[in-house]
Image (tube, rainbow, N blue to C red; front, side, top):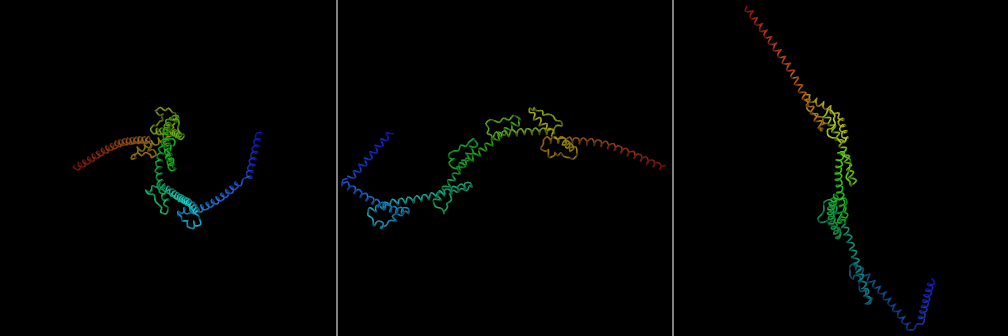
Length: 399
């Protein structure tokens, strides 16, 4: 701390001494030095005045030049009066400002024109792009994009550019959708090429195609594994879906398994029901039955058939009645077992009817024969008696 105080004191002393020296030099200046100082002051004043004149004339020329440059009218604002009261040097300064201003104004005008052209071109391009998309969707694409006379050349040029770009994009979108669809059929995840990801239309087309392919692939897998599950359930096996299946695929397998079990129960029940048409007495199916459930379902089906006996009687009666044709009830026409049973008992009825008719015919024939013989005998007897009476009468007259 003490060291810092000493250094600060020394610096202060040096500054005071230097100030005193300057004061002295000013106080004791020689006459020649005073003259030099006065000349320098005058030169600075003149230089300042010249600079002010230069700036004023330069700005004047710049303003005139910028106006003419913007309007693209060279020297339009310059006249003789512009230079009459000016020296050659001052006229040069005016022309310098004019030249710079003219280029500045001209450049500003060009930039504004260019901006306007770009604005109109962009507006036309956007409208042409939208029109191209609509025409493509409705299959009305024009070989040459339509022009609008009321619009500027730049607008129509932009419209044509946008229209063609839309058609190209849509062509690419069709291709993107096909590739996306194919990848959806083959892959679990999308791998979109940069060519399609660069534009929203092609990107969406690819995604749509991929999702459609994924959906079809998933539905195909669901159908496949649902059938596998169905076969497993129909065989009354323990459910064991393959490992690594997606949740919705595993769900389809389980759904198929339950359907298979349910269908097995229905089919076995129906077999028992139809067995009642072919057998008057229940008996357990002859094939080996490992699962006791099938035996139970078969028996329940057999016992539920309350139509077999009435249908047998109806078929037999129809066959026995003369003139009745075999007419299986509509309810059972699609049941092969019921139709076979009905036909069997209808034919048995017909056989019984024919046998009965034969027996009746035989009895009637015997009766008719006996009556005929008796009648013939009686007729012969009467003729004989009449003949005898006639002969007797003849003989009586003769005597």
